[in-house]
Amino acid sequence: MSRDVLWDGSFHWGEWCEPGEPGPAGDPIAWFTADKGEVGTAYLYRSVSTLATIAGERGIAGTPYAEIAVRIRDAWRTGFLDTGMRTQANRVRALAFGLVPAERRAEIADRLVALVRDTAGPGHTVMRTGAGEPG
Figure: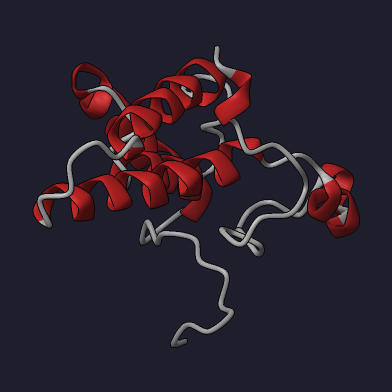
């Protein structure tokens, strides 16, 4: 795994209030200070791959963005595809950002559906933070 493209650390401007993640034993401080490399790296991939797309559409040749995006995606897959997928948000983010290999998309989507059913109970509602969202 190429660690130089992983965005490790406890704080990222990605998912700062992820539903279903109160931290160990319900301790929100432990959650806020825990490493969320899977989140930071996913958003880093999204940003760099967007830059690669923009550069390509503008006809700007020779930018390193596409190559860097592939390295970030591959490092995310190696580091988090099987170990960082414990919440609905992690699975949705991975599917939406294109981090999941095509041959595993159905499997991850099925696991997401199962998690929604297991955690939501009757009605099968997707978890959400409530912060900035309509009620």
